[in-house]
Image 1 (cartoon, rainbow, N blue to C red):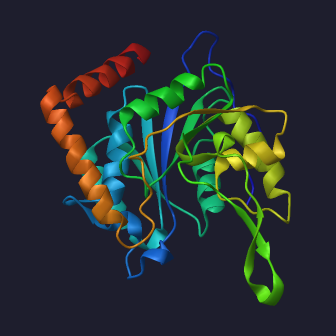
Image 2: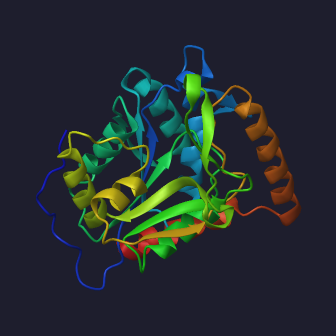
Length: 276
């Protein structure tokens, strides 16, 4: 894998950056069991992937949504995209999270370094347009942004003890610990530089994109903004049931508030019109 080292032309001075959301669905979710990727499991009558992509389609700050899907299920993702109407492309994802992120960056080679990309796990179906908007807003003054929530549990570090049993090694202060979520947002120039260096490292092991920036561009500040406890990742058996409960509670609150879907869609349409 490689990221094109050429720098695309920058947008005209004063122009607002173009915002692309890339929904990453390249993995198969082995921990869930069964023969279908977790992003295609049904959640309240719709696939998990559809919920995740719909949030970005509804976010007024997002101009373009692409989906990176495990190749053998790409046709199903295209059917989902057709129902949503706001997804511009469904592309093949890679065998790992890193390969899928790189595939998303390749798809955006025509965008300038000052444009923005949001990289989101398709297995997080409950991300809200509000979190998406906050992530985009933070990129006005940062090159990389992560979404996180405080750790409510004490997190410990362990090591191998006698007989191979795990033993307590350290207890980091909980006040400084966060649980990372997605989306993770970047100026394209920043994440491109980070991945060029990362892919030249034969020892590369990465589970998220902010970690790649932190490791390979240590001079680049990674801003952390508040996430949402409901923005869970569907990873283990039982997570779908939890997500369905959270979704039902959200819909009940939205019904009480009168809903906001049409207003958000209208705002996004107006922003697109302003670019023409």
